[in-house]
Length: 85
Image (cartoon, rainbow, N blue to C red; front, side):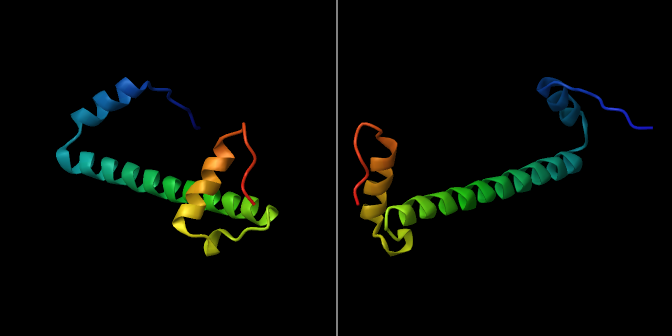
């Protein structure tokens, strides 16, 4: 038999504060590792999308200078003007 317990963030924090320091470290380490992995996945996803947008405009993200990349992203964010080609 499985059941689910719904806890608020405050309840979870209170619980973690009650466990021994070694276990707190294990919990925090696990959460930090998961957050890092999720962040890395988001970066990979974003890079793939920006490369695709560049390719659609006949550009190569990897061949662009840092300044060209900044200008390209700046153009993308500003909807009131077209992206440079």
